Length: 331
Ligand code: ADP
Ligand code: MG
Image 1 (cartoon, rainbow, N blue to C red):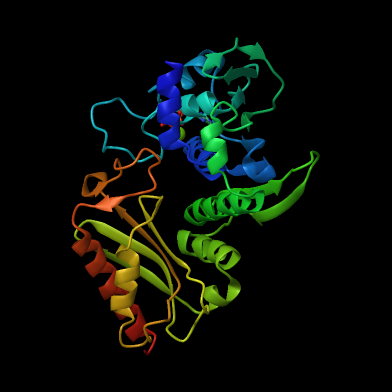
Image 2: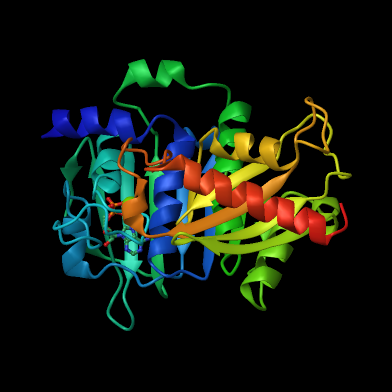
């Protein structure tokens, strides 16, 4: 079982940033309003996620660390998922490749913790915690030296963690996020902080995008709000006059999941075709919500890839609503 866990872990956890992604998604799924992410040495020696979500009860703690134990799906339809997690793989995988400790508390019940190392689970013990969950992952890949070799510099891994956290924070503007580098111990320093946004969804999103992509982007962004063929598209896209220089800020999310797909690149190019020279990249953060059956999220265990069954529909919606917004803005 330890070997199976280690093999699966290699697919789910490629580097510290992928561990952070899984753990923050769990915290989001738990209904948290504040999430703190701390790391040491680029996440290689420590990743700690603290949330104020629903918690895991004492009797569920060992279960949460068991393969394919998920509280989020009944197994009848892998595609009917609205939360991030659906495989029950992240925690057992992390417990196979690092030293994992979970401390949690549900309501007024006493807090408890459990540790797992090399897939060997320790006993559930009493702990002190006012609420929510703390997941601590130490010494990632200590048992798999081959993986360790592939890790990049602390700086590069820290950058990858920051990118992951910012992407997730973009899609969850009502949740407050703090990212801390605690290398060397202590409080460390906050390298990114986004307070929970308030107001309606567009207000919140606008505020969060100003924080993450930049004030200038937010000031020069068109509000996108469209619906067609069962797809809802919202977000912000920059005016053609706004340029971010060489760095590309193009973000697409489907059902709350960050998508790495060429779809948005092509759609933005199509929508801005008349305005931009080839070497300019319009900034945009767009969110599509749709029936889960219209997308494939199961293509990779790390779930970073979401594919549309019919990419043409999504592309068409993005192009037409951007063109419409541009025309309305007098372009
Ligand atoms: P999945 O997210 O796919 O269900 P995981 O291995 O990531 O699988 O997590 C296993 C289970 O542990 C979850 O289904 C959830 O019930 C519980 N869990 C994990 N992290 C948290 C958290 N931060 N707060 C509350 N429950 C959690
Ligand atoms: Mg999960």
